[in-house]
Image 1 (tube, rainbow, N blue to C red):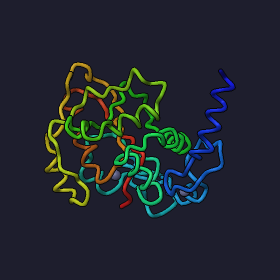
Image 2 (image 1 turned 45 degrees about the vertical axis):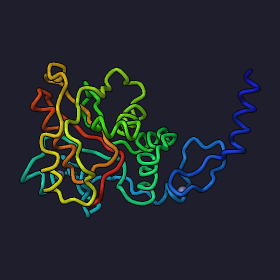
Image 3 (image 1 turned 180 degrees about the vertical axis):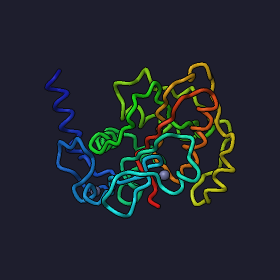
Length: 242
Ligand SMILES: [Zn+2]
Ligand SMILES: [Zn+2]
């Protein structure tokens, strides 16, 4: 049986050789990380110094983490937001194909990037919550990319991951290309909590694929804290560079 399954595996490798999730280059098997060396080299992993709150990187490559001007003047509702890499090519192609073309087989490779470039919050979360999709969007897409990332990043924390606690109340139009002000207006009161009692005094780690302006993370954090959460930390695979 073992021989048959090994044979089938090598047959599938010949017929469907592993390919880079970003540029589709064929990779030499066995490839556990589905990125070619060129794409890995071109990825812009987040490095310190960055804003100790929102995670925005600073142009000066030296110095300690400190608060950025935005977080000083208007502190967000979350305590920290961290990401693995900046959102641009080639990683953005892989994220796009995952989210919109359903290429979920790259999840383990995304998780490896996270574990190789971790910026974990300095707390152990009680709950790990994916940013929710509206029911209708979930039906169309068939999966919530934030939930799949949460499970891939933290396979041993299944019981802390809850996709039913934070819910999206409103179907918001795609936010790409909209200003921060319009995003905030569209998202206002867009989320709700199904069972506030479960959040009382809890530390939450909120997961999403991309941090763009921070409006979604901030509105989720506002909703969670209003429902009783003590702290909200945010982790995304990528963040848009400002
Ligand atoms: Zn590549
Ligand atoms: Zn900041």
